[in-house]
Structures are given as structure tokens and as C-alpha cells.
Length: 120
Image (cartoon, rainbow, N blue to C red; front, side):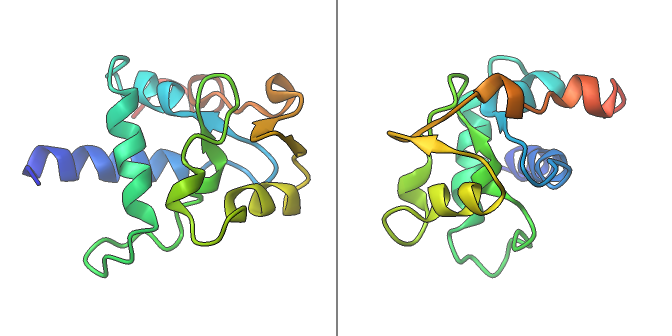
């Protein structure tokens, strides 16, 4: 992996760590906050690495289950151990999920720009 990708991934993890319990954000919202609005897919790759078991990356405290696609779909669920672990983690935080989609997504959405301001 390129060094600039590692640096980008660390920035993604830093934002994700700040998502409060019971809230979710999207890959695109994190990318936009980091000034790379067209890099939602890279944010997804960063989130995929969280549960990889790679001891070289310090990501145990990154709540990857709180990052979903722009429509509230649990598109990254296959990267979690177990069939419905991502859904279970969200439901444990009070977020209802039906057919792999967050119910009342707008209510639970956490926008990094609004919550963290513009200083990255």
C-alpha cells in the first residue's frame, strides 16, 4: 500500500472514531470532510481494513459499523465476522435496521462538517 494511502486511512479512522454511539455517517461524508469528496470508495477500503485482523494497523477502536453508504445501506456488512454482526452492533446502539437499511437514516446521520467543523 502506498504511504499516502496509509496517511489517508489514518485520517479516515480519526474521523470515524468521533462518531457517537447511536449515530452513523456515510463514506462520502467522511471523504467530503477530508477534502476528497470523490474518494468515498477509498473511505470504504479504509473501513474494510478495520476488521481485517491486521495487527500492523491500530484500528480496534474504530467503529466501522457506524459508516454506511449514502442511502443508509449496510454495504460493508460482509466485512464483519458473522452474518449480521454490523446490524447487531447498530441495533445494540438503538439504531433500527430493516432489510440492511437504517430506519430513519436522516435522524441518525452524523455529518462531520456540522459536528467537527472545518479543521481537519
